[in-house]
Image 1 (tube, helix red, strand yellow):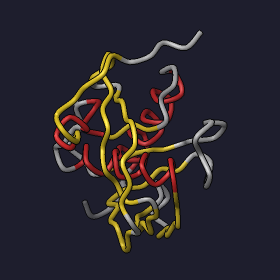
Image 2 (cartoon, helix red, strand yellow):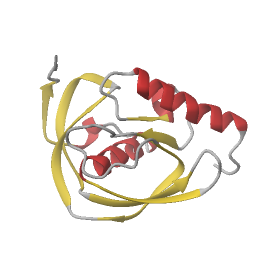
Image 3 (cartoon, one colour):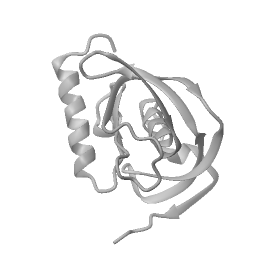
Length: 145
């Protein structure tokens, strides 16, 4: 991506604002809002499945440095709001990227937070969780009240 400009910082702010305005959303990537940049935000704070939690994380030009063993888990997505499916992902992850201020950030994440980071990374590569569903089985999203 190169330099982090004021426009990139505004995009990062918009991603966080949109994520927070969307019920049950724990992450959002720039391509989901029609922007072809490698940037996303994740926040699993308070999620019942979260083990690690780094609060609100926004990364530009993220990349996986290391990945642990893979496990299957149920996923959904704002881009496909009515369906979920089981996806195999690394249970531990080391990820590196830049903050909207341009500082390098390296995070060790696990469990649900690792899954959320990988899900958003897929969006940056043009993939949806549907592309990774094991066995091709999809399920209607549960609605919690």
